[in-house]
Amino acid sequence: MSSQQEPSFRESVDIMFSRAVALMDLPPGLEEKIRVCNATYTVRFGVRLRGQVQTFTGYRSVHSEHMEPVKGGIRYSLGVNQDEVEALAALMTYKCSLVEAPFGGSKGGLCIDPREYDEQELELITRRFAYELAKRDLIHPSQNVPAPDMGTGEREMAWMADQYARMNTTDINARACVTGKPINAGGIQGRTEATGRGVQYALQEFFRHPEDMKAAGLTGTLDGKRVIVQGLGNVGYHAAKFLQEEDGCLVTGIIERDGALFNPDGLDVEKIRNWLMKHGGITGYPDATHFEEGGKVMEEDCDILIPAALEGVINMGNADRIKAPLIIEAANGPVTAGADEILQKKGTVIIPDMYANAGGVTVSYFEWVKNLSHIRFGRMQRRQEESRHQLVVDELERLSAEKDLDWQLSPDFKEKYLRGAGELELVRSGLDDTMRTAYQSMRDVWHSRADVPDLRTAAYLVAIGKVAASYRAKGL
Image (tube, rainbow, N blue to C red):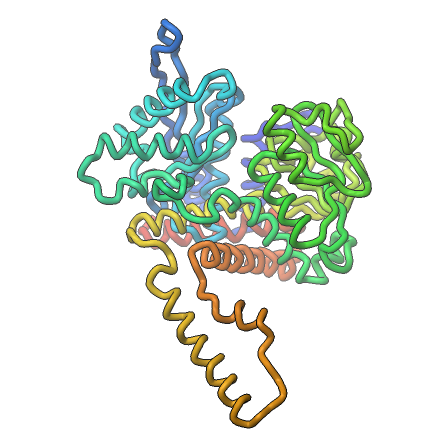
């Protein structure tokens, strides 16, 4: 790769794949089978809007069917194109494999700027897109299960699920055809926050390993660490909020479409998010310095940089000016393959997207299971858990009274111990376990093999290894 040429997103994924398989002992045929995207469907459909027919172009790409259904988000963006969708589908394959969600990889996109349409128009467009995909089983509970991505959310998923149900009136599992739905339409507690929450759990796990922190030149805990977040959408907002409120991090920079805010003493994430929702941008926000050129703030001194919006924001043009010793990729592909090389030479530690933002698909998996089982998590066992805990508390209190001991259970302990886990606690517990286990599988490879220079290569090795094992089991 020449030093001048910036690889595209798709080329970056390909370069990183090749880098990993070079360290593996795969038969060449199987390597090619895993590399290629199985199928991409392009759909062009018309919708009558504002007195005329408008034609839209959408894609649904299936990268690997070593497990079914295949899983992956649908994004609404003018930047959507076939190459991007196929690269994202490949990342989904490896992501699901790494965190052991039983899906193949898929991705979808509609080439549209959702801000140019009102809610009613977006519903017409979304339903028509869903119809075009569903009639080819590209939305289907056991074949292909989309989720929200950039430019889409709960609302769009509810429309898609309803469209599928209208077309499949006798399918008892119709709700499992998409994930990321609103709670009252078959969604699951904790799905909206899931990707940001996963980023938090990933960092917590990283900070449990002194050896890994040392590689990034960091010490101590998350408390007081300076964080810069690029993109305050769903993922960036939740990651920043949880790190600030629960781990004591100092969010010093926030970068958005219309520039960036910076304050070395810390920014109020919640207030900025509210301002952003109200004004559509961060311009004019009163309590921080505003920079017109947002990208420059990524180059400020900090401990942790969280790119949480677009791919390719850290590239060969700015990589050597990035000062953060630790980067966690909350977005898909924010660091290009060229930048990755530059940062690696500098000793920057990167927690890769394939792992770092897998919280979304993990909780999507829980939602899909909930829809197929037709019962809310915790419904059967919660009160039974509480009554068993109550027995222990009663017995302790009885012994205390009987022996006339001068101690009492603190009310805080009693309340916490007695409370049985509801759906949200169970989802967070499952997500935390998933993020810890996946991180350990990556770091084992990272530390045990001299030829594995970084966590990204380790993540690819673990993920591709599992996909290869699936294919072998199928007789390929």
